Image (tube, rainbow, N blue to C red; front, side):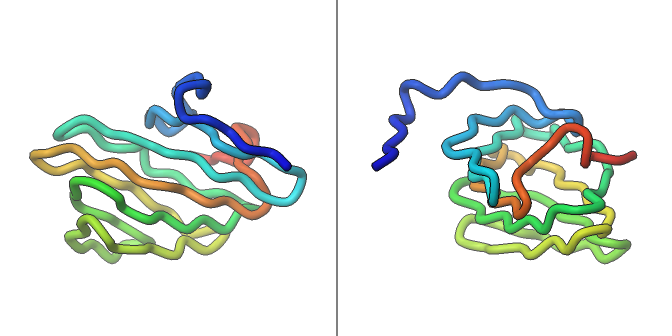
Length: 112
């Protein structure tokens, strides 16, 4: 059984500019927590291979997905298909989210 303690996770910055802590990275999928400080945004990008699901667990902001923009907040889940351009801008309280990627997150699959 693999159990990962939050305290053991080392944060790192992804190519899009968010700070993440990766809980699990298996050959099939990955699960990470990402954070953006108030006003910070990810760099607009897409993943050619990975489908992502964002689950906002704190704060909120503005999500742009393939030209459609809307306000998002705690409790919202967002499906990001492979090839979809996207950008998340944190609101006044920043944003904290869980991100599931299938196949798993890879710097090489992040395109600008």
